[in-house]
Figure 1 (cartoon, helix red, strand yellow):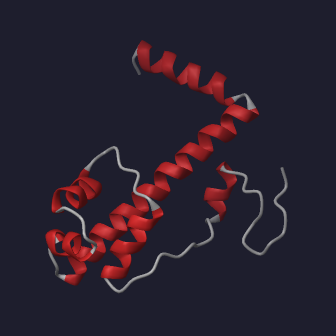
Figure 2: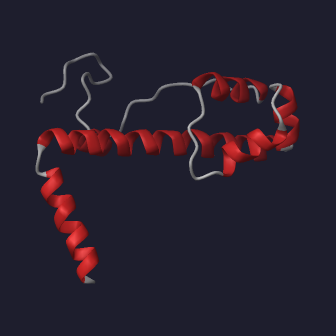
Length: 120
């Protein structure tokens, strides 16, 4: 392990020792994972449907380059409306699913799926 990596890891550990910072970090990681899962799921659904990205773009009234960037850019953050439109054009709908217990361990949700308050 290089000194710079070691220094980075030490800074990360010191920062995450603060409960508020650790929660903010976990929330950001959950957000990134959720966006990646959704966008990758849309790309997979387009491929499985056997339609072109251009056809999907036309179906939602968007320029094909916009959809291409959404599906390939590292800096993507689609609106829920756009996600819903793409999903609907493929005969799908957007749904929320509970986190796994492993995911919840890093991110203390305000409420768990069954409605009971999570312990903080």
